[in-house]
Length: 388
Image (cartoon, rainbow, N blue to C red):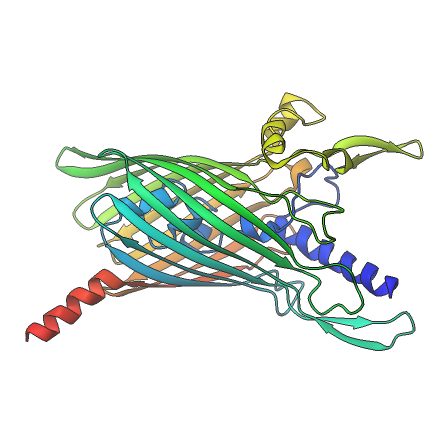
């Protein structure tokens, strides 16, 4: 039975590391439990190189920066995103994202989302090759947020989140259980409209510190792992080319606020290990993540990923997007181009995105799909029909 657990754990580690982008040559890669909570879940952000902390407000803003909801022109909306994840490796791994929001008045909004990560089905065998059934590991995040305008140009938000990671679901005769954690996000947005030369422009900047919360354990507290606390900082600029055309550019910086692996010596051999970080608490780990890289300041900078994206809209109905994501080689080596498109009608919108990796990568060819509904516009059309 130990062999079953060992083999199963190796498979999970491989899938989790692949989904988070770790490189086999990057032993100093910063990692955490529940890495799916850092995956861009929607098509718009995914089509712009994984940017979104300061892009124009949309329904899927809960992941990127929920402080944007109070600046949304529509009062309420709901969207569903679907991503077949790592299909070059696993045929049935999927990420789903259900999100919605509602403006309470001109300065307040409530929002919520559910992200569900299905790691697919895994067949289990005993040491003698006997079929022991199958396992169906899965994880999810459920959250609710509140956002509020602080002025005409500033807004802030707080999100409360419950996370569950059931990666040993279906494994027989094991003491390992599902891990749970509670977390919060704190986000702010600066959003200013500019009217110059008879054209509208918009400049925005945002910050989102997400997944500030308790560590997670799968063995009753014997080993506690950090969840993916993350700092996202960025800006965006939108320029109206003419009455029908507008162009936006955006830039995001991301840093995982989790302690770096430290160099330990085992049997006389130096290796990177997280054992020394086990005694750190969540808040202590956040602060330490800014100065603990073994290689000093330059290595600390290499733990920052960069995302840049552009979006073109025609008549606020058809969009074309592209972007680039960069991660240093020693910290994961994820480098890929993204492309996307969107169609927006009165009531619904449809978006998709596609990843083109710069080198052989399990992320190559990843597709995302998002279907959104403008509930405010739907209600307006329904009222018009009733008046008739």
